[in-house]
Image (tube, rainbow, N blue to C red; front, side, top):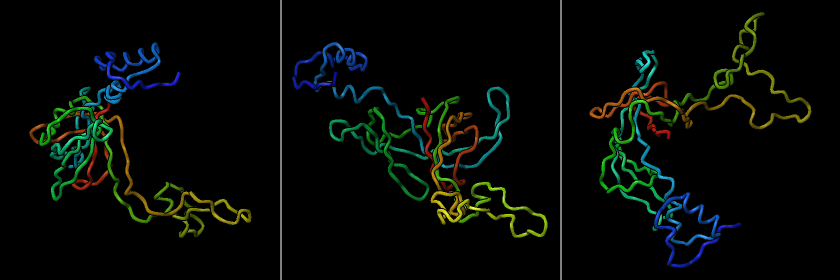
Length: 235
């Protein structure tokens, strides 16, 4: 049965803003009041789960199990709530943040249902904790124009019998008289790096609220002290 919206003002089913309750009513009655729409948009609860950081460097740390692992040290950038986006006014719920980078300020929008006062500072310890799983996104280092061997890991040509100039050769493209051209999308030489990459399921090893530093197990994209990284806590 398709969902029908009833334009009325008397409906007690939205007093308890719980999605399972609303779905049960929709299944039994066959309609929902328009007053229930905010409850549908606000469920499930989406807490603040995003931080922005700059990579300081890499080090070797020990996990809780006593194993040594390569880790990345991230410096959390100061963030303050600029304003809010509401369902009534904008059609969705979000928070706009003012991010103070070392030499500039930018704004970012985070989809969340939390109600925050403008000017509130986002603290790292309120979002992350030791042991949390996070994903880190950033722009990788640019390598410039590179050949197929470096860019795609081609084997290259033989190094013997005087073929000293074939070590970085890409080889045949596989196209003959028909179709008489190289298909688009073939892996060939071109610009390498400088693209967005997301690494998931990284563990938070250490958290220092005073220094605003987070130590994450594993490596993340980007250059030190330059690339803006997005840290998202995984639910």
